[in-house]
Structures are given as structure tokens and as C-alpha cells.
Length: 154
Image (cartoon, rainbow, N blue to C red; front, side, top):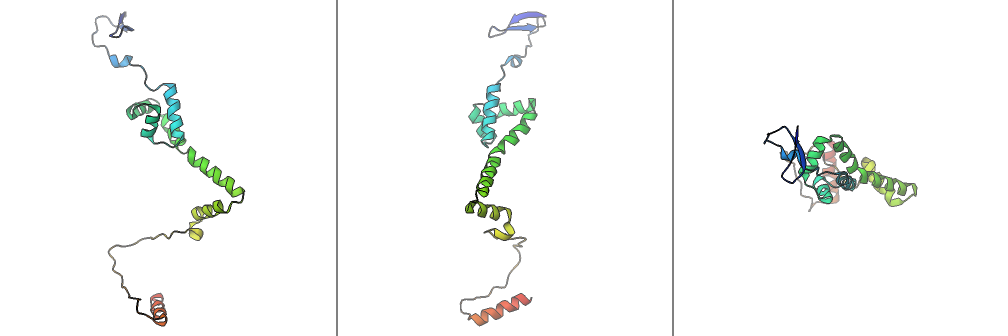
């Protein structure tokens, strides 16, 4: 093994007169521990991949190459992205424990939708179905009740 210098003056080891030196192998690592820390901070703020890369000042391609080399980082990234949701739930539960009416109402509207939701879900609507329409503008209350009773009887 012979020790030579590369184009930038760095010491390298070669196998004699081998001119096919892989210069990219000597490229410094882009994703350093400081960059990983910045990425983790970004993901903990629920940033997506591109936003976290901007925050850490690297390209998305560098992130994906790093994930290829360190597959466990992908799992960590996905867990960190959920951190703000966990914090929000903890704050919500704190307000519930303080008997905050608004927090309680919000909780019920989201967790017990069938009883407390302000929205109505439309399920299984067929767009090709034609419906019989009735003009109610000139009907009296008794006529409306009669029409409604007929529809309910069906």
C-alpha cells in the first residue's frame, strides 16, 4: 500500500499506480451530529422532511442518504413528529382536570361524536339516485305534517 496525496493535498492510501481513485469516498460526512440534532429539533416541532432540512441547512437528498445508512433514524423521526400532538393532549387533559368548560366541551365533541358533535356525517350517498322533491313554500302546516307522516311510513 502506498501513501499519496489527493487533489486537495490530503493523505490517502492507494494500491500503487491505481488511477481509478473514488474521490467521493473521501468526501466529508454532511450529516454531522450537530445536523442530526437540528433535524431532531425540527421533527420535534412537527416539521415535514423538507422543512426540517431547511431548518438544519441540508438538502432532502442528504437526509434520505442518512436514513439509508441509519434506518432507525426514520423511526425516531416519525416519533418526534408526534411530539406536539402529545403535548397538546397533555395540555387539554390539564384543562379538563381544572374543570375548564371549553376544554370539556371540545373533548366531548371530538371523543363522543355520536352524542356531542356539532357536525353531521353523511354516510353512503349515491350520486346517481334521484330524489322526489316537494315544494314546501306554499304548503300549510297540516299539509306538511301529512307529507312527513307519509314519508316516515315508508
